[in-house]
Length: 414
Image: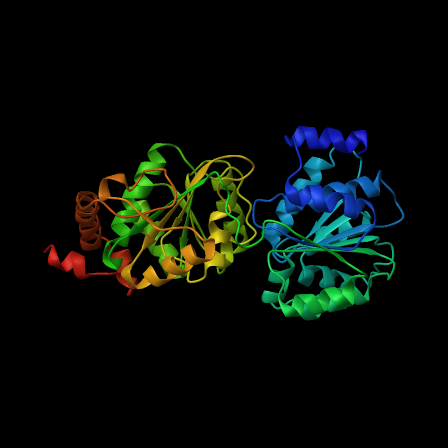
């Protein structure tokens, strides 16, 4: 690596390359088209940013030379941040083109001919049409989170972008999965690509402890509340996964009533609120983030301590994707799953998928760190939190709108 890039790597705090970086960086530096597959937290962003910086060298005024396409503004902003940090000593200029920002300011960004453009597909095409721009100077193209680009319906835009690019470009595609539509796109847009497939799907970090807590569906909120109280008291960063936006709002409201500071993330949240909430959690101004799967994908939270599945995922790969956010870069972490009786078949599927035996614990060792453990939640803790929840439900009018709230246990206590 050039000294300027090496300085950026050192400043970022990287000490040794991850498996995906070891495999992908030499291929990219060598000019190969690459399809990279790796799980969350594997360092894939640096796997394409570092070699691109190496190939671009220093600043040029002839036009933009690298284009990085991401599915959401959050992922684009995170990539922009990584590029700025790793390339801080190179003199290269980077431009960010995403929805939700001023179009006039982005016109100005494009006119400055940044060496690297990071963009979402919709905003990029809008600017290309409005400004009648060509992409003839682009030498390197990266499609990040490519499977999600297609899941979100960007297929037509991606093909339009490909048409505007020079044929002699180098193209990189990074994805968690490789569906048929993406394979067809890779065949059309890449030249003799090399597949780099490391740490995908079935791998879970050795430093991750997993605890599976079986409880009645009506008791889940009480169990979650007790668990979060314990983790917050340790000043640990925790992400909570819920099935729907309504569940996210309900959990967040209960946390608020319990004086637990948390932020939420779901796809309908406006861009400004999303940005503020992510930054508040990332900077540890609050320690709990409540999310849906769709909203959380691509949101990079470094050094996350815990993941909690309030609703257990119906597919093993989704479980792996969720808990893959914890125990990253050599750090340890924990994954807690609250499992209703109707979700037990999903738990069995997960253990078959992982090829691990199910080990049962008594109620007193629910917080034990051996992995993986399956047990029940201490009944006295459930009762304690249920009393608190009943008082909230009796006195909070905001909870009336949540028609899915489990009420059986609360009625019995009257």
